[in-house]
Length: 46
Image (cartoon, rainbow, N blue to C red; front, top):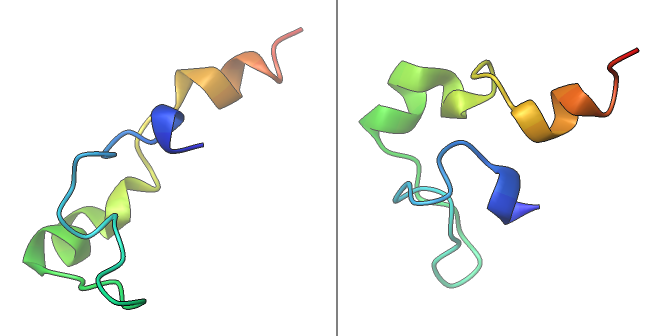
């Protein structure tokens, strides 16, 4: 799944000792959950 994430290289994506350290970028971008995700969009094409 990480291969399809639009910000798989984001500092906040990986856990550090079991804790996700959310920074300003995460909050400014809503964790990129609203970015287009072509892999999943293709799953629902007609």
